Image 1 (cartoon, helix red, strand yellow):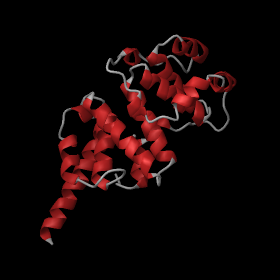
Image 2: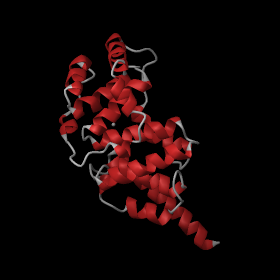
Image 3: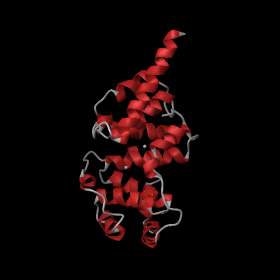
Image 4: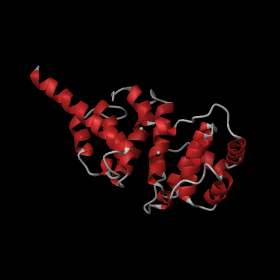
Length: 215
């Protein structure tokens, strides 16, 4: 599975990642418990995603999401090295009221297994959890830059946002516009959330430049 350019926008960009339930379902509580025993996954989740992005990417996550129905099967596939299963299980955990630690570890494992969107999502999670931590924000910028270069729509939208507002990087609206003018943000069409947010950001940057030129 994200306009005002502020922390509110950053939060709105992450809305698909926010858990919808207050209490975890029994199935998701079991996933929380099992992932908590995967110490390597939890340790990897502490690293910046940009250090784990493999050269070879996978597109198996585009096959669809069945993890809401069969999270246990998805976890088995994730353990077996299926990045797409890790990715969709992370969403199922969020929507089922699971622990943030669980979903972030799953996104990071998806990233490590070649799901570029998992890298973007984990970077966004780290960024939202520590908005005033410069090191974390720089990590997010590096990750978005890399995932954008790998043709990941949200990576480009988030990279442009950070460039436009100087979050973890020197503010450079012109560079942000160059990112937003790529085809990648709207790779999946104009109705895709990454595209809509990218175009809203682009419009605001252009309004700001126009207003500045009048002064």
